[in-house]
Length: 65
Image (cartoon, rainbow, N blue to C red; front, side):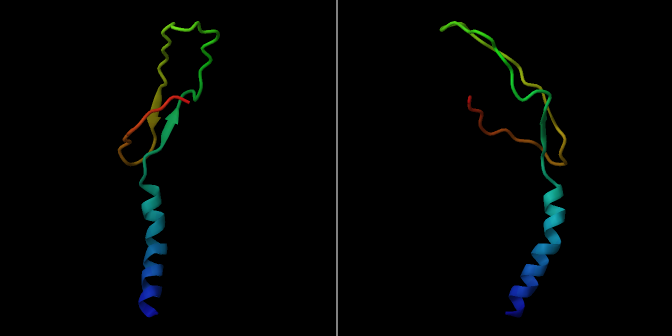
């Protein structure tokens, strides 16, 4: 029982330090209106972003929505 309390206290004290060291992605714009697009027309747009966090930002997968 005492060991559980020690572990719980250690996690509670370390959580703030762990939570502050994270990547944080900030987009200049989160959406873009392509207007009317004909089927088969290629469309392209660059979304600019910045990592405002303290750790490296790794993008593992992109999917259209």
